[in-house]
Image 1: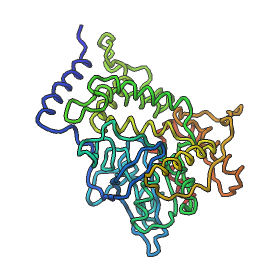
Image 2 (image 1 turned 30 degrees about the vertical axis):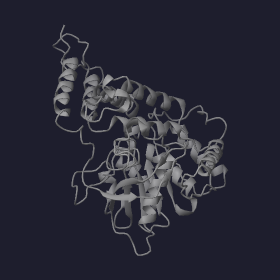
Image 3 (image 1 turned 60 degrees about the horizontal axis):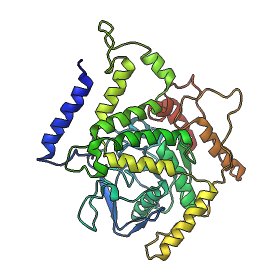
Length: 415
């Protein structure tokens, strides 16, 4: 029996195998960026240390004289710093319609900065980078990261630019986590915090879904325990990991309207390879992405999302761990941990009659939990907006697609 989907994977492996003998692994960068290289070491929350690091970033809009109009934009897991087109890279960015003159992030008013996170693969230091200690790629020798580690590195960049206080910290999905972390780590340096489709702590379902993605990637024999650079990359594992992720990013109601139960070619008998339209969509999504992102970066960045927890107990334990590591002689970058979220012992419980939630990865109750925690802590300037299923069917990816509701509310909050 023919299996064209498996034949295509085998052909891809053979092609990559021939290429790897004469050239490097795929180029994960996404175009020209600005770069900041920090030669001061960065102590990490779980005891590792980066002796130096680089951050790739891009910016839009003019910074004013007193540097008070800066917005730091945080990315989702797989995004680069290319949120909007630039002269050096005119390709549309991942938030192209949200940034620009008159847009929600209005470049007539604000200077917007977006970075690729450390641990990533679009110009910032990550597992595919060269370890200055031995001249080899870090691979899985790279230390475990947290969202807070990423934010501390971003604030090193802000220090180098002379930005003492942000007008706002804005982020969606993983970026929403980072935006909240920025407010906790540097409360005196962040004027406004925007967290869209984010959370204050990862819940078991989202951890489980990212676990399955990491498992299928690590079980690809080409992953080779992370040391695949210069060889055939684990593209099959990456493809399947992306397909699993895509299931969590979009909603069932949207797919019901978009695909239904339609098959790609009803005139042919059913097949074990992609056959329904939804299957071909997922197959295409995985194939398109499997060589555009470093597999090790997926492992490290997704794990950092799992570890995210702004609860008081976790913060105290992290502070103690960092203090213990500082005593060993590792350099510690100064931080302000005075502000914290005191999250309830039990997560927010869904109330009867609540609106349907199409985001299965970051459920709406997690946003309510953040808003309620801040209000209970005495903050009277909290705005919480929630979209019903009637407003948007796109699930988690709504933050990328809904300029009217997401962008409109963002504009009102920033003004």
